[in-house]
Image (tube, rainbow, N blue to C red):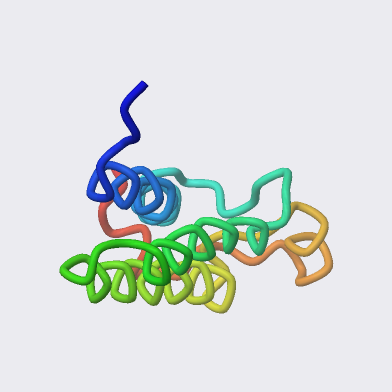
Length: 108
């Protein structure tokens, strides 16, 4: 069996971070609820995979790996900071805050 090319391995390592970032954006701006059943900090694992890609992937994709890692960490951190994506227990402890007005402009 032939080994996978490095570009394919790099794409597979970057894909979870891209999907997590897209899910956080969707959840933050499309879904009306701002609480979920698990800790959003668990989503940081996806940035770890793209950092692994930076270390072992082809040189041409290393900058892309850094950008995707920083974007993923920044999106999850911002979602936590601005009450866009909270664990249910944290949401209750913070007094059940609503989403900020600017985050609900896209909703009907």
